Image (tube, rainbow, N blue to C red; front, side, top):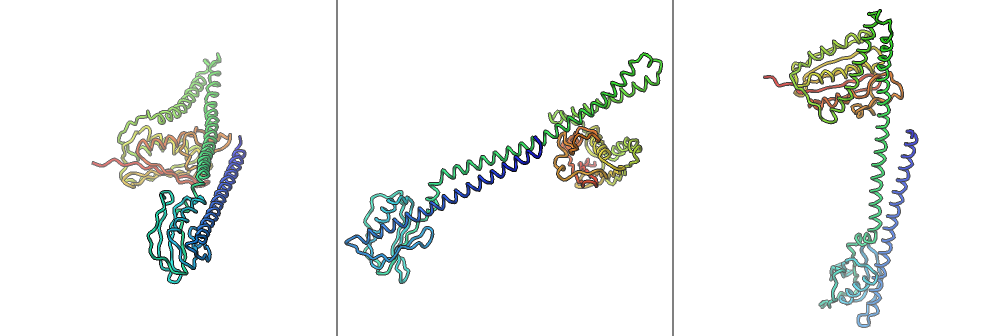
Length: 422
């Protein structure tokens, strides 16, 4: 499956998810609006029934001037004649239950002229027992209003929406798993590309020395080769060098296995970083001479002794310098410098090569990763060098950082803690 196909599938999937989420939000909002309307309608009917019952009471004749909604959960009934408080509370409880308004409420009686509070109570609708007669001697004067507040209206609206909320949560979980699956697919796709690139490179790297050894072996099998000792030595040397090359390649893969299995043990000794850098750079001089390249060494660190495994430290420097040469599409100009920083030594390897894109910065230290180049094999390697370097730095309790700009070059910065002077 190609990248374009996967990208289109993911795009369509996210569009579908966006549509589902939008639809879900729309229906939740519609359901809440409907519940709000139902509540308002039931509250109005309940209060209208309370007023009607008070008006029909032969002993306590009152006059209703209107029912008003002052807020989303607050209503008022305007009266122009006294009302029996006991009857009022009884009717409020009864009509609330009749209209299935099973939520607590508060009511209060206020005089219109002074807006002063006359009487009121909080009613817990779930714990109502026998309705008792209220012992209130006085009655409000004319022109008063009754306020009814439903403080738990929000909870009441949500009670019938619990199933819808549950399905919304389930949908969010499904979306979460879907997103996680997409990320896994993308990761697996990336790993597949890395694996294919590694297999292609490994096949190419192994094929060349094997073919060379096969050709040299065929020459050595000829009867007349014994008569030509110089050619015999030449082809034997070729086989020996290619065998070393194969051995080096196999060892690089085995080192990665040892790192991952945590079986690699460091042989820590006191190492002079400056002396080791000079030694490694000297080994690169013949190779650089063939391509007119050069390395500038600037040693500014006053403290340059560290506790490290000299073999692996040599490999770290070798890998960085080898990459600086391999990934340079012009005459290599490499600058290696040291300085003391943060109670340690900082080693900088700067080149003028192809550089590394920002997207690849986070992956450049991963196993088998190489900047994608299709089926081209113009640069040899398995993509294990920087993975090895990163893990060796961790084992040495050091740090590595990368700064790179495409078509400009890269700078790898290493930091090691220096050995304390006695």
